[in-house]
Amino acid sequence: MLKEAMTKPDGGWEKDESLRTNLDFAFLELCQRPEYADLIRQEISSKTTLDAKTISNDMPILDSFLKESMRLNPMDDLAIRRKSLSPYTFRSGTPHIPTGTITSVSSYNRMHDAHFYPDPNRFDGLRYT
Image (tube, rainbow, N blue to C red; front, side, top):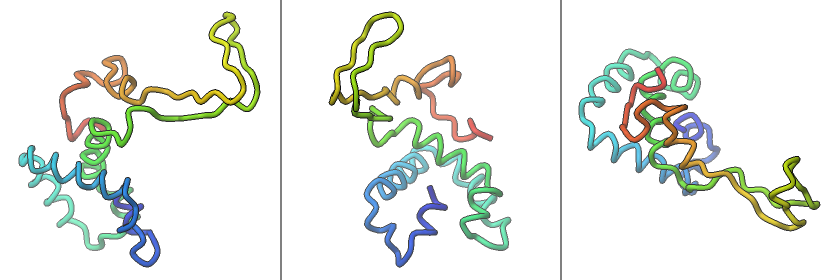
């Protein structure tokens, strides 16, 4: 997320609503969980450069915190929206999807599934480290 913000040309990231919203949520999560502030601060201050490559490759604590914030604060509860260009029927015979039907996958259900995320409703800023 920060990599995207830092690489937008001409400060264009300021106009990117989804990026700003994700950063807003991350800062709110950080305010609610000050125990992560020192960890993130130490990680940032240990770097001699703070560019997009460093953030995405060499800052696992910050990267994990941002991913967890986005997991629990999705921009939308639905993801992977697709419009059917032709009729489709699953092998089982149902459902049948007519041409022009918009389908989607619930990102909320996936992000709160204990099979994929142990204790899925608990914020764990180090979950991805």
